[in-house]
Length: 176
Image (tube, rainbow, N blue to C red):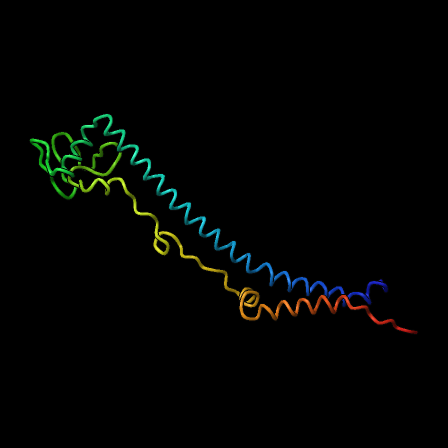
């Protein structure tokens, strides 16, 4: 035990210096990785929206290829403003008429004739917005991160190198 005691202050200085250098070197990269992870989550949400939109387009195309009568009626009403003969279009959730319910959809897109608008409105979905549906990026802001990434970063590096250097200095011999 007596052999370890004289070297203990030097070992503590080395460990403190390595810790300070590690903080100064790794903290900026950790913050950058945190930002990249947030950007990845945003892109995944946007990709999920695009995938749902792609499915809608495929359903729309399948409906057109099958000559889906509900979809064709909706297209005629939306694009040509022509309603089928004998059909009354009621607003605000009323019965659309001729056996077609309000909210009925053709090929899985949109609502009934009363809700018919531009085809793009049936198919497109608004992508998630940062700050509305998605949380805005909030970087980690602690005293340690400010010290390791701010204007005092060089001081932390110099102090770490000084601690390692002081810990490596040979200790004096006690002459008894």
